[in-house]
Length: 141
Image 1 (cartoon, rainbow, N blue to C red):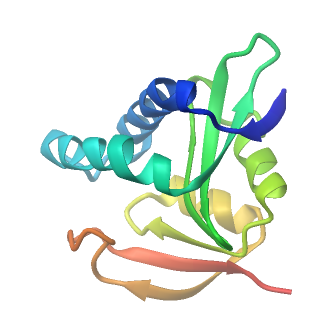
Image 2 (image 1 turned 120 degrees about the horizontal axis):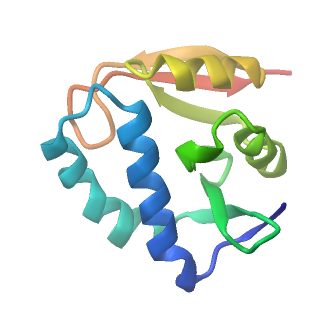
Image 3 (image 1 turned 90 degrees about the horizontal axis):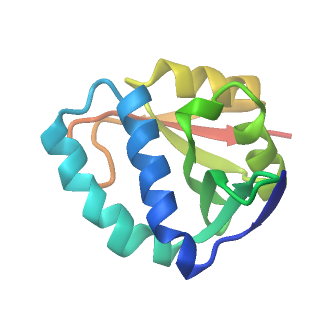
């Protein structure tokens, strides 16, 4: 497996990974919520961020991390590859200092805490103004 910067040709696969991962882990979202976020991810966020992809030996993309400077804005791994160290590999590669995680996603919170992040704050609304509380995490020291 290798980590590389994403290319335009990766966008469709990144959207597929995002969709599968969100459906597998973000049980607090309705299908309407997912449909709200999907075009924003596809048309805005992926192109606006520095996106690193984890690529398997067969060339398939297994996950990705989107960075905005020192902020880890998104981290998604294909659910068929959860628990295999891909997310940790992407974090170690990115050396992210801060990340927001949905409070209603305990699996993601546990993952980030295991990776050495600490909660440093909380917001009632997500970045789109939706009522999905965010926990602000940072790697300290």
